[in-house]
Length: 240
Ligand code: ATP
Image 1: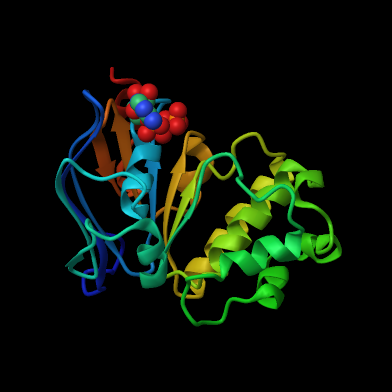
Image 2: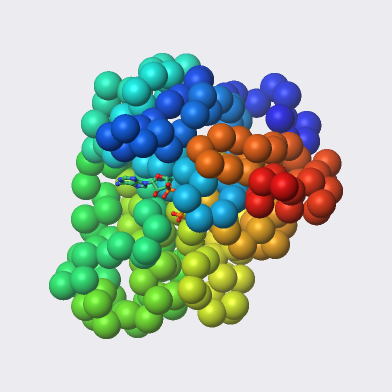
């Protein structure tokens, strides 16, 4: 799927996934594969189904039909915390941190139920040095950018293989967005596979190996960023 990656392992596969909220269908027949070490971006306007997709992979939403496979094994019957144990971590939209806990406590909680690996408080601080002087601060007192770094750091503490990032740059200052995108490149370099949801197409296409556009619960376009024209992306994004 991505350049020179034909022989890479498939980490995640979705097969014909349908997801409903009551009678409302949010995802229709969604299928794709994600290979090891890939940055796979999901773009699309509000309500396209991108957050639902990440929540479904993380186990917070169940498909009505279809399958989610992690390393070829169906994980549909596994609760979210079991998927964390397998190496799937979600950074949800809205920089959710535990507001009354300190930065350090938020990080330590992130390790609960996770896997063994190189991520710990020190390595997270190395990735996001801005957290270093904030360790004893209550998370509620942090700026948006600091909270986002903390939210990503907390997910890393579970030592995931697959990191799901939902709208991580939304509402943040350009300098923070730049740092988060640099961190994504470092994370892929360290062996992680990343699925990232963004509305801001410009940024995400600079790091993505593969991109899929969601429109009304369906993939309206997908491919390597270099193979897609901006006209095709705009048409798929807005349904023109
Ligand atoms: P956004 O950027 O606004 O989060 P999105 O592409 O991530 O958009 P989703 O949040 O996955 O889209 O929403 C897909 C559709 O499902 C939308 O029509 C939304 O209104 C609906 N939806 C999402 N969550 C729920 C819910 N808990 N109950 C009912 N409908 C929902």
